[in-house]
Image 1 (tube, rainbow, N blue to C red):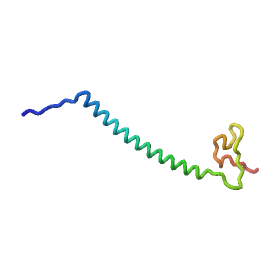
Image 2: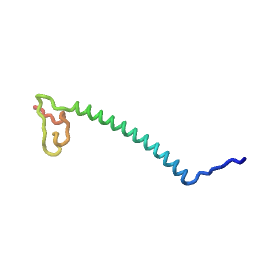
Image 3: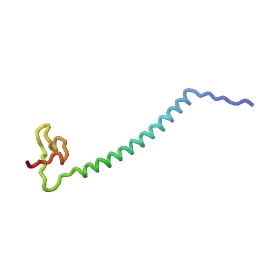
Image 4: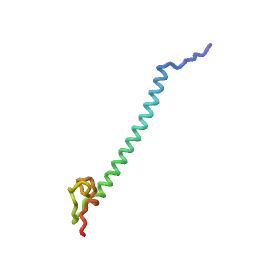
Length: 83
């Protein structure tokens, strides 16, 4: 009895390629989700660290290039120093 030699056709090769692509995509999506969670945790840590302190004065607005909250500076950077 002879063996059946089934040659891959373009459809079976395409299916194999799509399967590999889908597996690779799932791995990347899982990795991205883990990174997103880590970024959230880090952002929360930064937000907790960068809060205004009681008894201190901060610059909320100011000219372009000056340290103030409106220009995207941190609370610590926007603290008004007494000279």
